[in-house]
Length: 453
Image 1 (cartoon, rainbow, N blue to C red):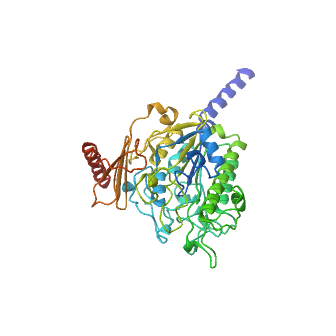
Image 2 (spheres, rainbow, N blue to C red):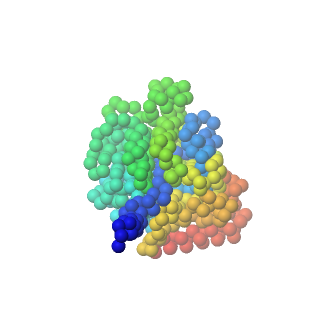
Image 3 (cartoon, rainbow, N blue to C red):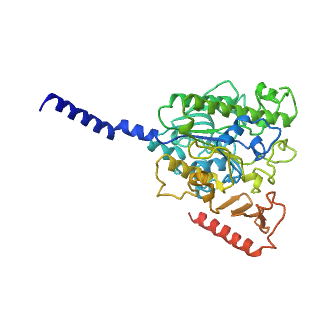
């Protein structure tokens, strides 16, 4: 065999080896998009400029909407923080996962979401993704339940339902962690979580990554999180007040709330800028939404947010509690500047991420959503969906344009046509008894099925 032929054979062998080895796997993985999943905390449906608010300064989220799709009929699977996050991470109704209440101060450090449930990063890591969570956990923080024990390579955030933005305390306990270690870091929590996301993007730009970025903002202030002598007020950096021409010393809760939302918007903008700086905009699927609707609890200073034009707010199953603002950007797939009125739900996020990552749906458990990318790419293909909700004494079902809801098991269901009555003001149950009866039967059947599961 001559030397040239021998060399040629060696080259062919090397190419064949690389094509089937780790390098090829890395190249294949990089074809799958990076994923940036961002949640706000108790942000109202009417709190953004792109959702019709004429006062709120949210230029970066408004820009994100212009670059992707703004969703008008996006639902969260629960109107409260713990359950909305547990259902997002598992892709399953709260009745299936056995967690349908807000964790108490003590429960935040207990098991919370049972450890047999499989979370988003556990589906993505086999596809070669680097995974990170920066922000609010709120689904249990006992040994075995913490983020880095459930599929996340990195975690920087807090265990509980909310913290003081600067001192990072919850219910009298300091609550800031890096991995499994408590850490003491100075800074505004919104900025700290955004900083971590930016650093993770820069470090992992050569391989696919999944970032779960659940911000603390704009969760309302709580006296039990404050230090002695500290006022119980909305907190934001001076620059956020300056965006409105407000003094940082203002005591007006409405003005202070606006500053919190603008600070959140600015932080999200920095993370999006980091994607651009690394040349990853076109390679990244960005999903943003609010975990549940803004709270509308009278006499507690919480009416400063807006769920307009929806009824009521968080912890209820009126539209203001479960229909939330949402934006998705995926260049080359989703039309920029589109407004999508397809019915979608947070349960759809996990099946979507499994699909875009090249994974497979599980065969050992039921996922309650579906891949929403086809409908985001081609809205005209959307079909009617049926969503079920149950929280505390509330029960509800959304089916096509109709919504059936009861506020107490001892009270009759009410029926609303959301296409004609988005504010849920006119009960049609007596006028459309067949529709109401069919939907009530569907709801009760769902309750029985999920109990059996």
